[in-house]
Amino acid sequence: MDRNLQTFPTLITERLTLRKLSKNDSEEILQLRSDSEINKFLDRKPRKTVEDALNFINIIIENESNNLFYWAITKTDEDKLIGTICLFDFVDDLKKCEIGCELLTQFHGQGIMLEAARKVVEYAIKTLGQKTIDAQTHKDNHSSTKLLQKLNFKKLDNIVENNPNLILYRLTI
Image (cartoon, rainbow, N blue to C red; front, side):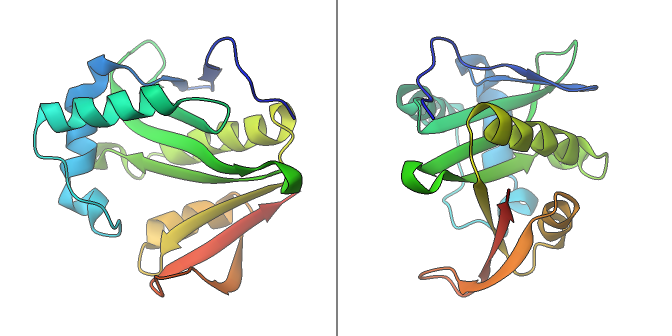
């Protein structure tokens, strides 16, 4: 399926708007990417300054294409980013991609990521024609595991290359 976009897709759910990431999101991106609770299962260097966050945002914006969809999650009627969700690593001949997400800790446990992920999975399947969506999570990240199970992802026995702490989940249509 051709993913060439004229405009970035905005997705709307009952409570949320998933919109394009912008430079105005730098404070919240800094919060997300420097929070030790959010990052304890991720293998990435924490961001330390607003400039770090802006550099990250610029990289996302520059690389946004038919191979990366990176949404800012906001509550409808508010523009403040509360999390992010993305589709990436598209493999066209397999109609496969990967999903990733993160949410500010004060919004955990409210069903926000489940609502956002359902919409993004629906978009990946119905609009982009994907047949397989993969997700990786740390073996101790029980919140992420529960989320993936609620979305009907199945745990695979495959070991994620170079990291035995990661578990691969797959949704197949």
